[in-house]
Length: 237
Ligand SMILES: Cc1ncc(CO)c(N)n1
Image (tube, rainbow, N blue to C red):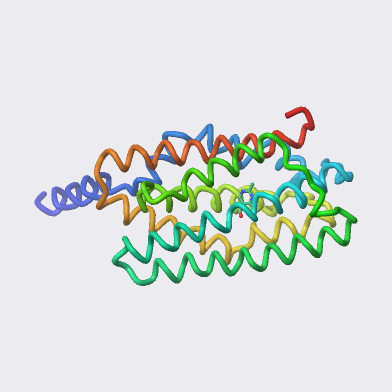
């Protein structure tokens, strides 16, 4: 009897300790899936996407522009982690993310020349401009570290889970998009996203209720921007 009660206590304790990111995922599942299971992503998974010049321009040209705005944002998160985080490994995780962005920029250049997309003449679409502005608004010193790291985690995770879904069993990813899916959908990138998630959960544990709610709003904004990003694929954004 006593033993049983102890077990119950443990279960209750564990329930109260659900990481914040997990509570958000449960609460906002539909919205989140709207990004990671976007019709454009599903069409890649099903192999029905037509990787015409327009789609190439989106996946390579528009995302190249996005990533160029993403770098200064990540730099601002790195600065905040140096000043505000007491955990040394935060810097290393974020620095690893920066390194993979350097690699991504080179990859975009390689893909662009393969498909004859001119990166210097790509005009950013409205949804992309809005997303990049949002990133810029998060670089200021007044933005708390837990809020900024939440945005960083959400941006990387949505991408990782979208492309990982394409690669799951039963998918028929076209040959020319296989490398794209592997770039973001691979397990190593997944582990990196989990490290970011752990930083978010840890930093939010110590944060005020106000900062936690700001972070949640920021998480939702990222997911909405990601949906809008893929909505560009219909060409009428
Ligand atoms: C739109 C978008 N979101 C997230 C990532 C992740 O790096 C990316 N490259 N592009």
